[in-house]
Image (cartoon, rainbow, N blue to C red):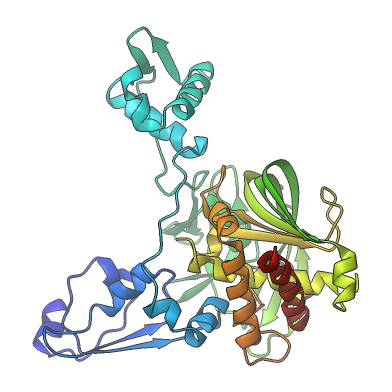
Length: 424
Ligand SMILES: [Zn+2]
Ligand SMILES: [Zn+2]
């Protein structure tokens, strides 16, 4: 295919982002990007497949139903006037550092002289913990790996063994899904898509890490509903801007997939909702959150009954826009919004890292909060829909079926917050 493209026998090719990295193709006349690939680095990489030396080339970007895509078509300077985004990573995250130290110790014992390479005192604390848990042994010469087996470190940072997707009739392995996504995507009764074919999940075995599926082509699709609770564990940073308070810190997120809905594909009509019996999952991670005094919301016309929809819409759009500032996609982050949070006693919007221990995304969001929320407000306001759509405030990953959402209220709420962030 590569040769046929180069020679001109093949006029075009439709591809996943595999072409971005794996195949050496250049000198095409035009590239059509279907949706923002998530990072500017990827966008330029894909666009760069077009263009021969000395000749011009055409790159067409087609926006998808996504708040970030909406923002970009209204703000071309966010593509053309901006350097490639910073990679965000927290090397001191013990969930990341621990397995890396084990791998290092398995190759060569770690000595005190090596500590600086791994973050100094942070590494020392993690090493002490690994020794206490019997994973490493401390001897005068350094820290030693104790097992005969090689340590495992998941370089993607996701926790837990992946779930195998197995076709029940044939026993063939279709693929795997991350442990973290399994409750939502392959619960019993879920419609599962694999390489253009559809399957219905017969059962999910969390102990055996497998989901049994059968090929089927129903006229409905499924969406999981979940309940997320968030508890503040500790606050690293807190700042007041009039009635708005901004925080960064550690949180405990409890998520439970409780049911799923079946919807007709043609009409979107809900057929039924089925309860699921899945265990709650806990995630200790980092979050950025802000609170607003209800009095201030009242003054801009957001009564307490309006706050859930406004805050929920602002939360969704903010999650959609964070990838503009941090190298993540919306599936790496989560959010919770509430008209009255037990720990803050106020209307509160949280955005948290979806990786245990935090991956640096919420921290980056905290550092650029004003610009991030301004872009969020801009994306919502620029969307031409009347009451909210997937291009602005609706989210494909909402565990609450995108209810309630108040697009206009979100703009009012963000204007209030931005007014105080910018004047203080
Ligand atoms: Zn919209
Ligand atoms: Zn939601």
